[in-house]
Length: 175
Image (cartoon, one colour):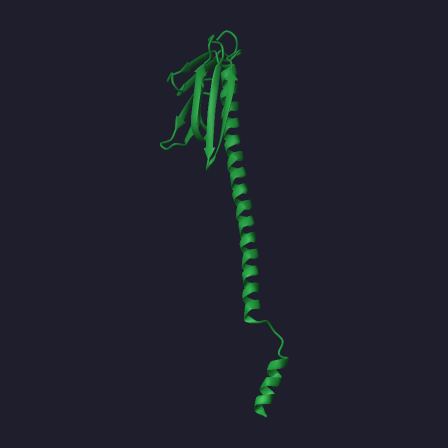
């Protein structure tokens, strides 16, 4: 009687077989792996886009500042012919006749440097030091043929992303 009862309970049981459970676990594992891969791709793309935007902003800021000061310059002294740094720009105010001096230098010991700006303002009797841009992997300031204009080329690198811009700048007439 007991043997029959065990069979009866065993015959009416509902559930999954071992093979069905293994297949379900394998499918769940594949779905989880796919979702994990998609999330990792999104994070990687987001990081790369963010790094590229930082590089673009740094290059734009460097170009803006050097272009602005070059447009005011009456005198340009690029000390190192190969790179043009340190770069010293001078100009005289129209009304006060004060001569301003701005010196750009690349500072840092590694592959990435900071573009520093030192502004000597005799009218205020002050010197201001500012970091213009960071993550600068290369920069050059060279005179173009004809001697009127200059090319300021700057590259910023953040992570694996880099951005290079070339700015053609020209001092004000009479320089």
